[in-house]
Amino acid sequence: MSTYREIIGKKIKKVSSDPSTGIDGEMWYNSSLGKLRGPKLVEAWASGGPLTDARADLAGAGTQTAGLAMAGVDRPSTPKNVSEEYNGTGWASGGNTPGAKSQCAGCGSQTAAIVFGGASQSATTFKYNGSTFSAGNSMNTGRSILAGFGTATAGVGAGGYTTTNSNAVEEFDGTSWTAGNALTTARRSIGGTGPTQAGGMVFGGQTTAKVGNTEVYDGSSWTAGGTMNNAREGLTGSGSNTAGLCFGGYTTTNVANSESYDGTSWTEGPDLATARRFLGGSVGGTAPAALAFGGFASNDTGATEEYNSSTNTITVGAWASGPAMGTGRYLGGYGTNTPTSAAITFGGHSTTSTALTETFDGSSWSEQPDMNTARSRIKGFGTQTAAAVMGGRVVGTPTDSMDDTEEYNGSSWTNVNNYPSNNRGIGGAGTQTAGLALGGTDPAIASVFDYDGTNWTAAEGNLNTARGYLSGWGTQTAAGAAGGSVSPNKQYEEYNGSSWTAKGSLLVSGDNISGSGSNPSAIFASGNSQPVGQAWDGTAWATSPSRGTANVGGNFAAGVDSTSALVSSGYVYPSTGPTTASELFTGQTTAVNIKDFTTS
Image (cartoon, rainbow, N blue to C red; front, side, top):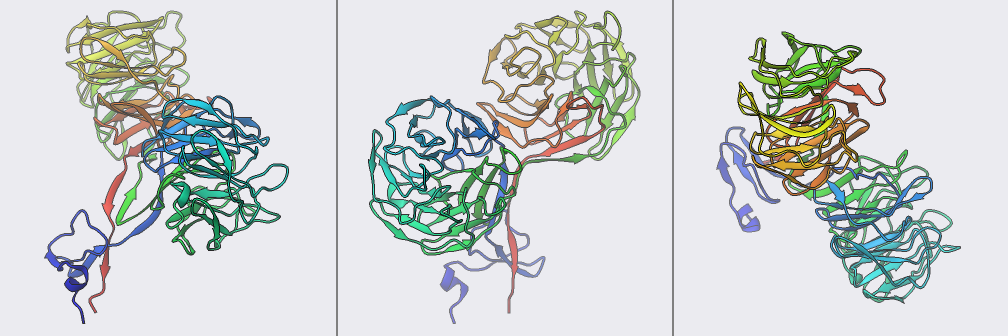
Protein backbone atom coordinates (compact mmCIF):
# COMPACT_ATOMS: atom_id res chain seq x y z
CA MET A 1 0.00 0.00 0.00
CA SER A 2 1.42 3.38 -1.04
CA THR A 3 1.63 6.26 1.42
CA TYR A 4 0.15 9.70 0.84
CA ARG A 5 3.65 11.12 0.44
CA GLU A 6 4.55 8.53 -2.19
CA ILE A 7 1.40 9.32 -4.20
CA ILE A 8 1.22 13.10 -3.81
CA GLY A 9 4.87 13.93 -3.13
CA LYS A 10 4.07 15.76 0.12
CA LYS A 11 3.75 14.65 3.71
CA ILE A 12 0.78 15.46 5.94
CA LYS A 13 1.70 18.20 8.40
CA LYS A 14 0.28 18.65 11.89
CA VAL A 15 -1.01 22.18 12.49
CA SER A 16 -2.99 23.87 15.25
CA SER A 17 -5.09 25.97 12.84
CA ASP A 18 -6.10 25.75 9.20
CA PRO A 19 -4.01 27.64 6.61
CA SER A 20 -5.61 30.52 4.73
CA THR A 21 -4.76 29.08 1.30
CA GLY A 22 -4.38 25.67 -0.26
CA ILE A 23 -4.30 23.72 -3.50
CA ASP A 24 -6.19 20.64 -4.58
CA GLY A 25 -4.59 17.47 -3.20
CA GLU A 26 -3.04 19.05 -0.11
CA MET A 27 -3.91 17.69 3.34
CA TRP A 28 -3.04 18.49 6.93
CA TYR A 29 -3.98 17.31 10.40
CA ASN A 30 -5.64 20.00 12.53
CA SER A 31 -4.63 19.04 16.08
CA SER A 32 -7.08 21.51 17.65
CA LEU A 33 -10.02 19.86 15.89
CA GLY A 34 -8.59 16.35 15.71
CA LYS A 35 -9.46 16.27 11.99
CA LEU A 36 -7.71 15.36 8.76
CA ARG A 37 -8.50 18.30 6.50
CA GLY A 38 -7.80 19.73 3.06
CA PRO A 39 -9.10 22.08 0.37
CA LYS A 40 -11.86 20.86 -1.93
CA LEU A 41 -12.74 22.12 -5.39
CA VAL A 42 -15.78 24.38 -5.67
CA GLU A 43 -17.61 24.92 -8.96
CA ALA A 44 -19.92 27.92 -8.77
CA TRP A 45 -21.26 31.05 -10.45
CA ALA A 46 -20.81 34.37 -8.63
CA SER A 47 -22.28 37.78 -9.47
CA GLY A 48 -20.19 40.53 -11.02
CA GLY A 49 -21.01 44.17 -11.71
CA PRO A 50 -23.97 44.42 -14.15
CA LEU A 51 -23.84 45.83 -17.67
CA THR A 52 -24.62 49.54 -17.72
CA ASP A 53 -26.95 48.90 -20.67
CA ALA A 54 -29.22 45.88 -20.05
CA ARG A 55 -29.82 44.05 -23.32
CA ALA A 56 -30.23 40.69 -25.06
CA ASP A 57 -29.17 39.20 -28.41
CA LEU A 58 -25.66 40.54 -27.88
CA ALA A 59 -22.25 39.16 -28.85
CA GLY A 60 -19.43 38.27 -26.48
CA ALA A 61 -15.64 37.99 -26.70
CA GLY A 62 -12.64 37.96 -24.40
CA THR A 63 -12.06 36.29 -21.05
CA GLN A 64 -13.48 36.39 -17.54
CA THR A 65 -11.16 39.19 -16.43
CA ALA A 66 -11.12 41.01 -19.78
CA GLY A 67 -14.53 40.48 -21.33
CA LEU A 68 -16.24 42.33 -24.16
CA ALA A 69 -20.00 42.76 -24.69
CA MET A 70 -20.94 44.01 -28.16
CA ALA A 71 -24.19 45.35 -29.62
CA GLY A 72 -27.52 43.70 -28.67
CA VAL A 73 -31.13 44.80 -28.50
CA ASP A 74 -33.51 46.51 -26.10
CA ARG A 75 -36.48 44.22 -26.62
CA PRO A 76 -38.64 44.09 -28.48
CA SER A 77 -36.95 45.88 -31.38
CA THR A 78 -34.27 48.49 -30.67
CA PRO A 79 -30.79 47.33 -31.82
CA LYS A 80 -27.80 48.84 -30.01
CA ASN A 81 -24.40 50.08 -31.18
CA VAL A 82 -22.76 50.04 -27.74
CA SER A 83 -19.92 47.93 -26.40
CA GLU A 84 -18.76 47.45 -22.82
CA GLU A 85 -15.51 46.12 -21.36
CA TYR A 86 -15.21 43.98 -18.21
CA ASN A 87 -12.19 44.22 -15.90
CA GLY A 88 -12.88 41.20 -13.68
CA THR A 89 -15.13 43.23 -11.38
CA GLY A 90 -17.42 45.44 -13.43
CA TRP A 91 -18.18 46.96 -16.83
CA ALA A 92 -17.15 50.26 -18.40
CA SER A 93 -18.13 51.78 -21.74
CA GLY A 94 -16.14 50.79 -24.84
CA GLY A 95 -16.33 52.14 -28.37
CA ASN A 96 -19.54 52.24 -30.38
CA THR A 97 -19.99 50.05 -33.46
CA PRO A 98 -20.45 51.90 -36.79
CA GLY A 99 -24.02 50.62 -36.90
CA ALA A 100 -26.56 49.10 -34.51
CA LYS A 101 -26.62 45.31 -34.49
CA SER A 102 -28.39 42.44 -32.71
CA GLN A 103 -28.68 38.65 -33.02
CA CYS A 104 -25.00 38.74 -33.96
CA ALA A 105 -21.88 36.74 -33.07
CA GLY A 106 -18.43 37.73 -31.92
CA CYS A 107 -14.98 36.37 -31.16
CA GLY A 108 -11.50 37.48 -30.22
CA SER A 109 -10.13 39.36 -27.23
CA GLN A 110 -11.00 42.60 -25.47
CA THR A 111 -8.37 44.44 -27.50
CA ALA A 112 -8.81 42.63 -30.84
CA ALA A 113 -12.32 41.39 -31.61
CA ILE A 114 -14.87 41.14 -34.40
CA VAL A 115 -18.67 41.20 -34.33
CA PHE A 116 -20.55 39.95 -37.39
CA GLY A 117 -23.90 38.88 -38.80
CA GLY A 118 -27.15 39.84 -37.16
CA ALA A 119 -30.85 40.50 -37.46
CA SER A 120 -32.42 40.97 -40.89
CA GLN A 121 -29.75 38.58 -42.22
CA SER A 122 -26.98 41.12 -41.83
CA ALA A 123 -23.57 40.31 -43.34
CA THR A 124 -21.69 43.31 -41.90
CA THR A 125 -18.51 42.86 -39.88
CA PHE A 126 -17.05 45.35 -37.41
CA LYS A 127 -13.49 45.11 -36.06
CA TYR A 128 -12.46 46.35 -32.57
CA ASN A 129 -8.94 47.40 -31.56
CA GLY A 130 -9.59 47.94 -27.86
CA SER A 131 -10.92 51.48 -28.21
CA THR A 132 -12.72 51.94 -31.53
CA PHE A 133 -14.63 49.89 -34.09
CA SER A 134 -14.09 50.05 -37.84
CA ALA A 135 -16.02 48.45 -40.69
CA GLY A 136 -14.57 45.24 -42.11
CA ASN A 137 -15.46 43.24 -45.19
CA SER A 138 -18.90 41.65 -45.05
CA MET A 139 -19.61 37.94 -44.78
CA ASN A 140 -20.52 36.10 -47.99
CA THR A 141 -23.90 35.10 -46.57
CA GLY A 142 -25.85 37.38 -44.25
CA ARG A 143 -27.48 35.57 -41.32
CA SER A 144 -28.72 36.01 -37.79
CA ILE A 145 -28.51 34.06 -34.49
CA LEU A 146 -25.29 32.33 -35.53
CA ALA A 147 -22.27 31.14 -33.52
CA GLY A 148 -18.74 32.54 -33.50
CA PHE A 149 -15.35 31.52 -32.11
CA GLY A 150 -11.65 32.04 -32.72
CA THR A 151 -9.70 35.27 -32.97
CA ALA A 152 -10.02 38.58 -34.79
CA THR A 153 -7.60 37.35 -37.47
CA ALA A 154 -8.68 33.69 -37.52
CA GLY A 155 -12.39 33.65 -36.70
CA VAL A 156 -15.27 31.33 -37.55
CA GLY A 157 -18.96 32.09 -38.11
CA ALA A 158 -21.18 29.01 -38.16
CA GLY A 159 -24.86 28.17 -38.60
CA GLY A 160 -27.63 30.69 -38.05
CA TYR A 161 -30.65 31.75 -40.05
CA THR A 162 -31.11 33.23 -43.53
CA THR A 163 -34.62 32.54 -44.79
CA THR A 164 -34.14 29.01 -43.45
CA ASN A 165 -31.78 27.39 -40.94
CA SER A 166 -28.20 27.48 -42.18
CA ASN A 167 -25.27 25.07 -42.00
CA ALA A 168 -22.92 27.58 -43.65
CA VAL A 169 -19.46 28.11 -42.19
CA GLU A 170 -17.14 31.01 -43.01
CA GLU A 171 -13.60 31.80 -41.85
CA PHE A 172 -12.22 35.30 -41.33
CA ASP A 173 -8.48 36.01 -41.83
CA GLY A 174 -8.51 39.56 -40.51
CA THR A 175 -9.48 40.99 -43.88
CA SER A 176 -12.04 38.84 -45.67
CA TRP A 177 -14.39 35.90 -45.21
CA THR A 178 -13.94 32.56 -47.03
CA ALA A 179 -16.39 29.67 -47.19
CA GLY A 180 -15.39 26.66 -45.05
CA ASN A 181 -16.72 23.15 -44.66
CA ALA A 182 -20.40 23.14 -43.70
CA LEU A 183 -21.89 21.93 -40.43
CA THR A 184 -23.56 18.52 -40.44
CA THR A 185 -26.70 20.00 -38.90
CA ALA A 186 -28.26 23.22 -40.19
CA ARG A 187 -29.51 25.20 -37.18
CA ARG A 188 -30.13 28.63 -35.69
CA SER A 189 -29.91 30.13 -32.17
CA ILE A 190 -26.74 28.09 -31.84
CA GLY A 191 -24.04 28.21 -29.18
CA GLY A 192 -20.32 28.26 -29.87
CA THR A 193 -16.99 28.77 -28.16
CA GLY A 194 -13.27 28.48 -28.74
CA PRO A 195 -10.22 30.68 -28.17
CA THR A 196 -8.76 29.68 -31.55
CA GLN A 197 -10.01 28.67 -34.98
CA ALA A 198 -8.70 25.12 -34.50
CA GLY A 199 -10.01 24.80 -30.95
CA GLY A 200 -13.67 25.64 -31.35
CA MET A 201 -17.02 23.91 -31.29
CA VAL A 202 -20.74 24.60 -31.73
CA PHE A 203 -23.60 23.08 -29.75
CA GLY A 204 -27.35 23.20 -29.22
CA GLY A 205 -29.68 25.35 -31.26
CA GLN A 206 -32.93 24.96 -33.11
CA THR A 207 -33.76 22.85 -36.19
CA THR A 208 -37.44 21.92 -36.16
CA ALA A 209 -36.91 21.30 -32.45
CA LYS A 210 -34.30 22.10 -29.81
CA VAL A 211 -31.13 20.05 -30.33
CA GLY A 212 -28.22 19.11 -28.11
CA ASN A 213 -25.69 17.76 -30.57
CA THR A 214 -22.11 19.07 -30.64
CA GLU A 215 -19.77 19.56 -33.58
CA VAL A 216 -16.04 20.05 -33.03
CA TYR A 217 -13.79 22.01 -35.41
CA ASP A 218 -10.07 21.35 -35.96
CA GLY A 219 -9.47 24.33 -38.19
CA SER A 220 -10.66 22.68 -41.39
CA SER A 221 -13.30 20.00 -40.74
CA TRP A 222 -16.09 19.12 -38.34
CA THR A 223 -16.54 15.93 -36.29
CA ALA A 224 -19.39 14.86 -34.05
CA GLY A 225 -18.91 15.42 -30.35
CA GLY A 226 -20.92 14.40 -27.29
CA THR A 227 -24.59 15.25 -26.92
CA MET A 228 -25.62 17.81 -24.33
CA ASN A 229 -27.76 16.67 -21.40
CA ASN A 230 -30.17 19.56 -21.92
CA ALA A 231 -31.09 20.36 -25.55
CA ARG A 232 -31.78 24.10 -25.97
CA GLU A 233 -31.39 27.19 -28.11
CA GLY A 234 -30.26 30.75 -27.37
CA LEU A 235 -27.27 29.59 -25.30
CA THR A 236 -23.59 30.55 -25.28
CA GLY A 237 -20.32 29.22 -23.92
CA SER A 238 -16.69 29.64 -22.95
CA GLY A 239 -13.55 27.57 -23.26
CA SER A 240 -12.24 25.19 -25.92
CA ASN A 241 -13.39 22.00 -27.63
CA THR A 242 -11.51 19.91 -25.04
CA ALA A 243 -12.39 21.98 -21.97
CA GLY A 244 -15.56 23.91 -22.64
CA LEU A 245 -18.64 25.21 -20.89
CA CYS A 246 -22.14 26.04 -22.13
CA PHE A 247 -24.76 27.98 -20.16
CA GLY A 248 -28.16 29.63 -20.35
CA GLY A 249 -30.64 29.23 -23.20
CA TYR A 250 -34.26 28.29 -23.76
CA THR A 251 -36.27 25.06 -23.86
CA THR A 252 -39.90 25.91 -23.19
CA THR A 253 -38.68 28.31 -20.52
CA ASN A 254 -35.42 30.17 -19.89
CA VAL A 255 -32.61 27.91 -18.70
CA ALA A 256 -30.12 28.53 -15.89
CA ASN A 257 -28.21 25.29 -16.26
CA SER A 258 -24.57 24.96 -17.31
CA GLU A 259 -22.68 21.95 -18.63
CA SER A 260 -18.94 21.30 -18.95
CA TYR A 261 -17.29 19.48 -21.85
CA ASP A 262 -14.09 17.39 -21.59
CA GLY A 263 -13.61 16.73 -25.27
CA THR A 264 -15.86 13.68 -25.21
CA SER A 265 -18.97 14.22 -23.09
CA TRP A 266 -21.02 16.87 -21.31
CA THR A 267 -21.47 16.92 -17.50
CA GLU A 268 -24.10 18.89 -15.59
CA GLY A 269 -22.66 21.82 -13.66
CA PRO A 270 -23.91 24.55 -11.32
CA ASP A 271 -26.81 26.78 -12.37
CA LEU A 272 -26.64 30.46 -13.18
CA ALA A 273 -28.38 32.68 -10.64
CA THR A 274 -30.41 34.23 -13.48
CA ALA A 275 -32.09 31.94 -16.02
CA ARG A 276 -31.95 33.64 -19.43
CA ARG A 277 -31.64 33.23 -23.17
CA PHE A 278 -29.77 35.08 -25.92
CA LEU A 279 -27.01 36.05 -23.49
CA GLY A 280 -23.33 36.80 -24.09
CA GLY A 281 -20.29 34.83 -22.97
CA SER A 282 -16.50 34.91 -22.86
CA VAL A 283 -16.03 32.82 -26.01
CA GLY A 284 -12.32 33.61 -26.01
CA GLY A 285 -11.87 32.43 -22.42
CA THR A 286 -11.31 29.15 -20.64
CA ALA A 287 -13.93 26.89 -19.09
CA PRO A 288 -12.82 27.14 -15.43
CA ALA A 289 -13.10 30.93 -15.60
CA ALA A 290 -16.15 31.82 -17.69
CA LEU A 291 -18.21 35.00 -17.94
CA ALA A 292 -21.97 35.21 -18.66
CA PHE A 293 -23.71 38.57 -19.21
CA GLY A 294 -26.90 40.17 -20.43
CA GLY A 295 -29.72 38.26 -22.09
CA PHE A 296 -33.46 38.05 -21.72
CA ALA A 297 -34.95 36.81 -18.43
CA SER A 298 -38.43 38.18 -17.71
CA ASN A 299 -37.10 41.27 -19.47
CA ASP A 300 -33.72 42.54 -20.66
CA THR A 301 -31.09 42.02 -18.00
CA GLY A 302 -27.62 43.38 -17.38
CA ALA A 303 -26.84 40.59 -14.90
CA THR A 304 -23.24 39.39 -15.04
CA GLU A 305 -21.97 36.15 -13.53
CA GLU A 306 -18.51 34.59 -13.24
CA TYR A 307 -17.87 30.84 -13.23
CA ASN A 308 -14.94 29.48 -11.24
CA SER A 309 -13.65 26.01 -10.45
CA SER A 310 -11.13 26.30 -7.62
CA THR A 311 -10.44 25.45 -4.00
CA ASN A 312 -11.57 28.93 -3.01
CA THR A 313 -15.07 29.90 -1.97
CA ILE A 314 -15.85 33.34 -3.39
CA THR A 315 -18.40 35.48 -1.55
CA VAL A 316 -19.20 38.28 -3.97
CA GLY A 317 -19.66 41.90 -3.01
CA ALA A 318 -23.32 42.66 -2.45
CA TRP A 319 -25.87 44.95 -0.86
CA ALA A 320 -28.04 43.57 1.91
CA SER A 321 -30.94 45.07 3.87
CA GLY A 322 -29.87 46.91 6.98
CA PRO A 323 -31.85 48.09 10.02
CA ALA A 324 -34.53 50.72 9.53
CA MET A 325 -33.91 54.31 10.50
CA GLY A 326 -36.21 55.93 13.03
CA THR A 327 -37.55 58.49 10.53
CA GLY A 328 -37.83 58.21 6.76
CA ARG A 329 -36.88 61.36 4.88
CA TYR A 330 -35.09 62.82 1.91
CA LEU A 331 -31.88 62.52 3.85
CA GLY A 332 -29.72 65.54 4.49
CA GLY A 333 -26.26 64.00 4.77
CA TYR A 334 -23.60 62.09 6.59
CA GLY A 335 -20.34 62.69 8.28
CA THR A 336 -17.89 61.40 5.66
CA ASN A 337 -14.98 58.98 5.98
CA THR A 338 -16.57 57.25 8.95
CA PRO A 339 -16.78 53.48 9.24
CA THR A 340 -20.17 51.85 8.71
CA SER A 341 -20.20 51.00 12.42
CA ALA A 342 -20.11 54.70 13.34
CA ALA A 343 -22.21 56.69 10.88
CA ILE A 344 -24.18 59.86 11.49
CA THR A 345 -27.10 61.38 9.55
CA PHE A 346 -28.66 64.77 10.03
CA GLY A 347 -31.42 66.97 8.68
CA GLY A 348 -33.45 66.27 5.55
CA HIS A 349 -37.14 66.58 4.81
CA SER A 350 -40.34 64.68 4.07
CA THR A 351 -43.01 67.40 3.83
CA THR A 352 -41.06 69.88 5.96
CA SER A 353 -37.40 70.29 6.86
CA THR A 354 -36.14 68.51 9.94
CA ALA A 355 -33.33 68.92 12.48
CA LEU A 356 -33.27 65.20 13.32
CA THR A 357 -29.95 63.47 13.97
CA GLU A 358 -29.46 59.69 13.99
CA THR A 359 -26.36 57.57 14.50
CA PHE A 360 -25.59 53.99 13.48
CA ASP A 361 -23.50 51.65 15.63
CA GLY A 362 -23.17 48.81 13.15
CA SER A 363 -26.42 47.10 14.12
CA SER A 364 -29.07 49.75 14.83
CA TRP A 365 -29.99 53.41 14.51
CA SER A 366 -30.41 55.72 17.52
CA GLU A 367 -31.92 59.20 17.64
CA GLN A 368 -29.58 61.90 18.96
CA PRO A 369 -30.08 65.60 19.89
CA ASP A 370 -31.47 67.71 17.05
CA MET A 371 -29.54 70.34 15.13
CA ASN A 372 -30.27 73.92 16.14
CA THR A 373 -31.73 74.70 12.69
CA ALA A 374 -33.99 72.37 10.70
CA ARG A 375 -32.79 72.08 7.10
CA SER A 376 -32.47 69.86 4.06
CA ARG A 377 -30.34 69.71 0.89
CA ILE A 378 -27.23 69.38 3.06
CA LYS A 379 -24.16 67.24 3.40
CA GLY A 380 -21.32 67.55 5.83
CA PHE A 381 -17.98 66.13 6.85
CA GLY A 382 -16.27 64.62 9.85
CA THR A 383 -17.04 61.65 12.08
CA GLN A 384 -19.86 60.44 14.29
CA THR A 385 -18.46 62.34 17.27
CA ALA A 386 -16.93 65.31 15.45
CA ALA A 387 -19.07 66.38 12.48
CA ALA A 388 -19.90 69.65 10.73
CA VAL A 389 -22.77 70.72 8.47
CA MET A 390 -23.06 73.86 6.36
CA GLY A 391 -25.70 75.67 4.32
CA GLY A 392 -28.93 73.99 3.25
CA ARG A 393 -32.50 75.13 2.92
CA VAL A 394 -35.76 75.32 4.81
CA VAL A 395 -38.50 73.77 2.68
CA GLY A 396 -41.31 76.19 1.82
CA THR A 397 -39.66 79.54 2.64
CA PRO A 398 -39.35 82.21 -0.08
CA THR A 399 -35.57 82.64 0.34
CA ASP A 400 -34.71 79.21 1.51
CA SER A 401 -30.91 78.81 1.19
CA MET A 402 -28.90 79.55 4.32
CA ASP A 403 -25.30 80.04 5.50
CA ASP A 404 -25.58 78.48 8.98
CA THR A 405 -22.77 76.15 10.10
CA GLU A 406 -23.08 73.77 13.04
CA GLU A 407 -20.66 71.36 14.73
CA TYR A 408 -21.53 68.13 16.53
CA ASN A 409 -19.41 66.75 19.39
CA GLY A 410 -21.16 63.42 19.88
CA SER A 411 -23.79 64.77 22.25
CA SER A 412 -24.93 68.21 21.04
CA TRP A 413 -24.85 70.71 18.15
CA THR A 414 -23.26 74.17 18.39
CA ASN A 415 -23.64 77.13 16.03
CA VAL A 416 -20.24 78.30 14.73
CA ASN A 417 -18.99 80.77 12.11
CA ASN A 418 -21.28 81.03 9.11
CA TYR A 419 -20.51 79.58 5.70
CA PRO A 420 -19.28 82.26 3.23
CA SER A 421 -22.56 82.28 1.24
CA ASN A 422 -26.19 81.22 1.34
CA ASN A 423 -26.28 77.94 -0.55
CA ARG A 424 -27.57 74.38 -0.61
CA GLY A 425 -26.61 71.09 -2.24
CA ILE A 426 -23.00 71.54 -1.05
CA GLY A 427 -20.74 68.48 -1.10
CA GLY A 428 -18.36 67.74 1.75
CA ALA A 429 -15.09 65.93 2.47
CA GLY A 430 -12.51 65.79 5.22
CA THR A 431 -12.75 66.21 8.99
CA GLN A 432 -14.26 68.73 11.41
CA THR A 433 -10.92 70.53 11.75
CA ALA A 434 -9.77 70.05 8.14
CA GLY A 435 -12.92 70.10 6.05
CA LEU A 436 -13.68 70.81 2.42
CA ALA A 437 -17.00 72.19 1.09
CA LEU A 438 -17.66 71.71 -2.62
CA GLY A 439 -19.92 73.60 -5.02
CA GLY A 440 -23.57 74.33 -4.43
CA THR A 441 -26.70 75.08 -6.39
CA ASP A 442 -28.18 78.48 -5.54
CA PRO A 443 -27.18 79.12 -8.28
CA ALA A 444 -24.79 76.36 -9.35
CA ILE A 445 -21.27 77.38 -8.32
CA ALA A 446 -17.75 75.94 -8.56
CA SER A 447 -16.49 77.50 -5.31
CA VAL A 448 -14.56 75.36 -2.83
CA PHE A 449 -13.91 76.37 0.79
CA ASP A 450 -11.58 75.05 3.49
CA TYR A 451 -12.66 74.78 7.12
CA ASP A 452 -10.11 74.61 9.97
CA GLY A 453 -12.56 73.98 12.78
CA THR A 454 -13.15 77.72 13.28
CA ASN A 455 -12.94 79.68 10.05
CA TRP A 456 -13.93 79.29 6.40
CA THR A 457 -11.44 80.35 3.73
CA ALA A 458 -11.46 80.06 -0.06
CA ALA A 459 -9.56 76.97 -1.18
CA GLU A 460 -6.74 77.27 -3.71
CA GLY A 461 -8.69 75.70 -6.56
CA ASN A 462 -12.31 75.72 -7.69
CA LEU A 463 -14.14 72.82 -9.31
CA ASN A 464 -13.85 72.61 -13.09
CA THR A 465 -17.65 72.24 -13.33
CA ALA A 466 -20.03 74.41 -11.30
CA ARG A 467 -22.68 72.17 -9.70
CA GLY A 468 -24.62 71.25 -6.60
CA TYR A 469 -26.12 68.05 -5.22
CA LEU A 470 -22.78 66.38 -5.83
CA SER A 471 -21.00 63.84 -3.66
CA GLY A 472 -17.58 64.41 -2.13
CA TRP A 473 -15.16 62.18 -0.26
CA GLY A 474 -11.56 62.00 0.89
CA THR A 475 -9.55 64.61 2.77
CA GLN A 476 -8.92 68.35 2.55
CA THR A 477 -5.83 67.75 0.40
CA ALA A 478 -6.87 64.57 -1.47
CA ALA A 479 -10.54 64.65 -2.35
CA GLY A 480 -12.93 63.43 -5.02
CA ALA A 481 -16.13 65.05 -6.30
CA ALA A 482 -18.66 63.31 -8.53
CA GLY A 483 -22.08 63.75 -10.07
CA GLY A 484 -24.27 66.74 -9.41
CA SER A 485 -26.96 68.92 -10.89
CA VAL A 486 -25.33 69.82 -14.23
CA SER A 487 -26.27 67.56 -17.14
CA PRO A 488 -25.13 64.90 -17.96
CA ASN A 489 -24.46 64.50 -14.20
CA LYS A 490 -21.39 62.31 -14.80
CA GLN A 491 -18.56 64.73 -14.01
CA TYR A 492 -15.80 63.40 -11.77
CA GLU A 493 -12.85 65.42 -10.47
CA GLU A 494 -9.96 64.86 -8.05
CA TYR A 495 -8.28 67.44 -5.81
CA ASN A 496 -4.63 67.49 -4.69
CA GLY A 497 -4.91 70.38 -2.25
CA SER A 498 -4.31 73.09 -4.84
CA SER A 499 -6.20 72.22 -8.04
CA TRP A 500 -8.92 69.99 -9.46
CA THR A 501 -8.35 67.61 -12.37
CA ALA A 502 -11.18 66.16 -14.44
CA LYS A 503 -11.06 62.34 -14.51
CA GLY A 504 -13.09 59.60 -16.15
CA SER A 505 -16.82 60.23 -16.18
CA LEU A 506 -19.28 58.22 -14.10
CA LEU A 507 -20.93 55.41 -16.04
CA VAL A 508 -24.42 56.23 -14.76
CA SER A 509 -25.62 59.80 -14.25
CA GLY A 510 -25.32 61.00 -10.71
CA ASP A 511 -27.76 63.77 -9.75
CA ASN A 512 -28.44 63.20 -6.03
CA ILE A 513 -25.94 60.35 -6.19
CA SER A 514 -24.67 58.53 -3.13
CA GLY A 515 -20.95 57.98 -2.75
CA SER A 516 -18.11 57.49 -0.33
CA GLY A 517 -14.54 56.38 0.03
CA SER A 518 -11.11 57.93 -0.03
CA ASN A 519 -9.07 59.37 -2.86
CA PRO A 520 -8.41 57.44 -5.04
CA SER A 521 -10.91 54.63 -4.30
CA ALA A 522 -14.66 55.08 -4.02
CA ILE A 523 -17.97 53.31 -4.37
CA PHE A 524 -21.22 54.81 -5.62
CA ALA A 525 -24.74 53.51 -5.93
CA SER A 526 -28.09 55.08 -6.72
CA GLY A 527 -29.02 58.53 -7.81
CA ASN A 528 -32.63 59.27 -8.64
CA SER A 529 -33.77 56.18 -10.61
CA GLN A 530 -30.35 54.51 -10.85
CA PRO A 531 -29.58 51.58 -8.52
CA VAL A 532 -26.52 50.46 -10.54
CA GLY A 533 -23.34 50.57 -8.45
CA GLN A 534 -20.12 52.14 -9.69
CA ALA A 535 -16.58 51.77 -8.32
CA TRP A 536 -13.49 53.91 -8.91
CA ASP A 537 -10.13 52.17 -8.49
CA GLY A 538 -7.95 55.22 -9.01
CA THR A 539 -7.82 54.75 -12.77
CA ALA A 540 -11.26 53.96 -14.16
CA TRP A 541 -14.92 53.53 -13.29
CA ALA A 542 -16.56 50.11 -13.54
CA THR A 543 -19.97 48.82 -12.51
CA SER A 544 -20.36 47.20 -9.11
CA PRO A 545 -23.32 45.35 -7.54
CA SER A 546 -26.65 47.17 -7.76
CA ARG A 547 -28.61 48.25 -4.73
CA GLY A 548 -31.98 46.71 -4.00
CA THR A 549 -33.75 50.09 -4.11
CA ALA A 550 -33.19 53.14 -6.28
CA ASN A 551 -33.62 55.93 -3.71
CA VAL A 552 -33.54 59.62 -4.41
CA GLY A 553 -31.24 61.36 -1.95
CA GLY A 554 -29.99 58.32 -0.08
CA ASN A 555 -26.42 59.09 0.97
CA PHE A 556 -23.47 56.97 2.02
CA ALA A 557 -21.46 56.66 5.14
CA ALA A 558 -18.50 54.38 4.62
CA GLY A 559 -14.98 53.37 5.48
CA VAL A 560 -11.99 54.83 3.70
CA ASP A 561 -12.06 52.42 0.77
CA SER A 562 -14.60 50.80 -1.53
CA THR A 563 -15.05 47.57 0.42
CA SER A 564 -17.87 48.62 2.73
CA ALA A 565 -20.62 51.20 2.64
CA LEU A 566 -23.97 52.18 4.10
CA VAL A 567 -26.88 53.94 2.41
CA SER A 568 -30.18 54.83 4.00
CA SER A 569 -33.41 56.78 3.86
CA GLY A 570 -34.40 58.95 0.90
CA TYR A 571 -37.43 58.98 -1.37
CA VAL A 572 -38.19 55.82 -3.31
CA TYR A 573 -38.16 56.57 -7.05
CA PRO A 574 -40.57 57.58 -8.43
CA SER A 575 -41.48 59.74 -5.45
CA THR A 576 -43.93 57.53 -3.59
CA GLY A 577 -42.82 58.91 -0.25
CA PRO A 578 -39.88 58.65 2.13
CA THR A 579 -38.44 55.34 3.28
CA THR A 580 -36.70 54.31 6.49
CA ALA A 581 -34.81 51.53 4.68
CA SER A 582 -31.04 51.20 4.85
CA GLU A 583 -28.67 48.91 2.98
CA LEU A 584 -25.15 47.73 3.75
CA PHE A 585 -22.47 46.85 1.21
CA THR A 586 -19.73 44.30 1.82
CA GLY A 587 -16.95 43.80 -0.69
CA GLN A 588 -15.94 40.48 -2.20
CA THR A 589 -14.04 38.00 -0.06
CA THR A 590 -12.20 34.81 -0.94
CA ALA A 591 -11.45 31.95 1.43
CA VAL A 592 -10.13 28.45 0.95
CA ASN A 593 -12.90 25.80 0.91
CA ILE A 594 -11.75 23.41 3.64
CA LYS A 595 -13.36 19.99 4.13
CA ASP A 596 -12.87 17.15 6.58
CA PHE A 597 -11.65 13.78 5.30
CA THR A 598 -12.12 10.37 6.86
CA THR A 599 -9.12 8.71 8.51
CA SER A 600 -10.52 5.18 8.33
